[in-house]
Length: 385
Image 1: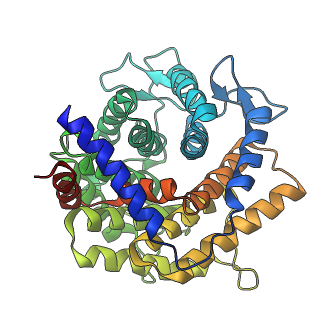
Image 2: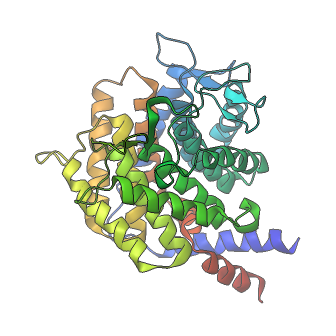
C-alpha cells in the first residue's frame, strides 16, 4: 500500500513539476493533432483487428515482419499516452497478436521474424532488441506486468547472442547469417539492457548494466568511425568492417551512451552522446536540414535527438527534430507512404513531440530519464522519509 501511494505521489509531483517548467521554445500545439490524424490512418489502413497485428500495406494484407511490428507497437505506446481510452486496448490487443511470432518451443524463447509454429531457428537479435525497448516503455506507461515479463524474457535471448568471437559483441542472426556482428543488434540491445537496469529489482537489474556497457564498449571499439558515427557491421571470420553509415545505427548508440550516463553519472558517457549528436548533422540535407536516409531509418535519429535534448537542452537538437517531423508530416499529407513502417514512424515522431506539449508527456519522460538515485530521493520525499 505504501509503495502504491508513493508511486501515485511521485507521478503527481512530476506532473506538477513538468507543468511549472515551461520549455524554452513555444509549443505549436499542433503535433498532437497531426499525430492523431496519422494514427487514425494507420489503424484504418494497416490494422488487422482479427489477428491483432499490422499488415505490410493496404494491398498486401499479410502480417508485416516483427521488427516493423515493433515500430508499430512503439507508435501505439505514444498514442496511448495521449488517448488511453482508445489506444491502451489496442496496445494490449497488439501485444497478444505478437504471440503469433513468439517461439516458446526452443531453449531460449524469442520472436521469429514471421509468424511461427515454433522450433524455429531464424531469429534476429536486433528484431528482439527493438521489442524489449518498446515493451518496457509500455510497462512504464501502464504498469502491466506482462510487458515487463516479456521484455525480460526477450532481453535474455538478445544477450544470448553475445560470445567471445572477435573479442565479443552480439551477433545479428541466431544462425550467424552473413557471418556478422552489427551495430543494429548491439546498440538497441544495450538500450534495452539499460532500461531494465534503471527499473532496479523489477527489471532484475544485476548484470544488465554490465551487459550494456560491454555491448557499447565493443561496438565503439570495432565500428565507430573517426567522426563519431558508426559503420554498419563487422565480418567475424575476417574482421573486415562493412562500411556504410546509417542514421539508426548511430542513433541507438547515442541513446545507449545517454543511458549509461543516466545510470552511472559518468560525464564521459554524456560526452560521447553529444559527440554522436553533433556528428549526425552529416546525415542532413544541407538545404532542407532533413535526414537523407529513408524514414524507416531516420525516425530513430529524430528520437535520439529528442532524447539528447532532454539531457542537454541544446536547442539545435530540438530544431533538427522538429524540422524532420514537419517534413515527414508535410510529405504524409501530400501522399501517405504505401508501407506500414513509414506511416507508424511518422506517427511515433509526432507523438514524441506532442509529449513535449503536455505536462503529462513531459512528466512521463522525466520519470523515464531519471537516474536510480533520483528515483530514490524523489520516493523518499513523497513518502516523508
